[in-house]
Image (cartoon, rainbow, N blue to C red):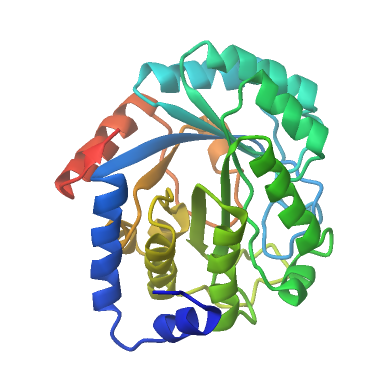
Length: 319
C-alpha cells in the first residue's frame, strides 16, 4: 500500500485504531523482533543558545539553574553505565557552545574505550563539526526536526529555520551516522496533516531511528498556557511510522510516561522497540527540565535491573 499524505491523515483520524496497532506490532515483530534496546541517556549540560518557545532550557528562561558536567564527570558516568550492561550511551545537552567539537571529540574517544556505542544529541552544527565527531567515534546522531511544517517551525523556533534543520539531518545521514529524527505530537496549531508530513519527512531523510513524543507544556516558557498533547495520538503516530518504515528504531519516549505510565508500556504493543533510561547524576537530573517531570534519585545499577524486569514482564527481551 502506498502511504500518501492524505492516506496517513485518514488513518490518523480513524475512530477505531485497534487494527492499525495490531498491524504495527506484527510488523515490529517481523522486522526488529522482540528485543527492546535499552539506551542510557546522560544529560551533561542544560545551557542552550536557542529560543525554542516550548522548551524549559531555552536561553530566555531566567528561572532555571544552569549546569555543565566536566569531562571527567561525563566519562566516569559513562563508565558506570557500560559496567552495568548498557550498550549505547546517549550524550544529550542544549546547544552549548562551551563544548566545542574538539572537547566533545576527546570525551567520545575516552568513552569508546568502554566498548559502548555513542549517540549524540547536541543540536545543530556545521558539516565539518559533525564529520569530526564521527571520526572521533560517534555512532549515531539524534536531531529531532520537531515539526515538518515551515510556518509552525518558524513560530516555535525564532532562532532557526526548518530548512537549516533538515540540512543538518541530511549532512548527518551523508556522513554515515545512524540518523535519528523525530517530532512532537500535540504542538499548538498542529493538525493531522502536519503529523502526516512529519512521518513522511522521516522517510524522506532515511532516518534509522525516530523519537516521537507527546508535547508537554512548561510553566516557565512562552507557551505555558497551551494544553498538553494527546498520548493516544502519539501512539497512533508511532504505529504508522512503524508500518511505513518497518525497520526503524522507535523509542517509548519519556514524555509518554510523564503523562501516563501505562501509555509508556502500551506503546511497546504498537511499534516501539527502544527505551531510554536516564543516568544523569542526581544533582543535575532535575535541572534538565525541557518539561516538568517527577524524577527519582539516580542509581544506575538498580534502575537498570528494574527496567529489565519491567521489559520481561511485557514478554519482551531487554538488551
